[in-house]
Length: 115
Length: 109
Image (cartoon, rainbow over all chains, first blue to last red; front, side, top):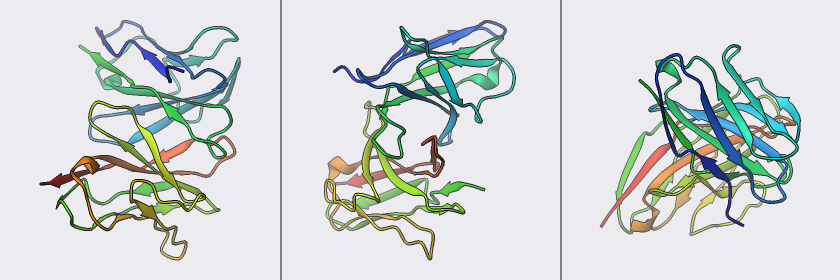
């Protein structure tokens, strides 16, 4: 089991472009969480998804950000019309159950730089 | 409001010295508390959780509900303990984690 895979590891986008971040959970895991880490800060929860469903998006900015976890394929975090303030490390975690019951496994993260 | 506070950004100790990484939380119900660790160039991984009451790599953490604290302790630090440590809580039915700002532990030889 390769663990949670995130790609790309580094992504550079110009202001106004779109950023797509991918997360492949561990085999057998159907719960995915996205977190954002701004410079000098801790990880902040963004969204929690199960297959084909968004369960909790209370941490997602209201505009430009969206997430999906289709029946087949990786979870995608999409940021439209990126701005400099979106520059951050984005981490994905997966678990076979909600993390309160089981351990969440994290990916290596995607470092987004907006220029 | 749900919050986790790690007051120290950096903690530097000598090898063999005791270590205590502080964590205080604010939560109205009964949270589940965790310590995650990130070694250099590695991914974030679970170190321990309060519910299991176990010792991992010599580290222990006791949940003190009166002081709303979950400090991480180790009696004798090793150089390989140098890493970034995050305290986190989970209190909702969704299992989302609320993280502290993190403490960098530096163990000097």
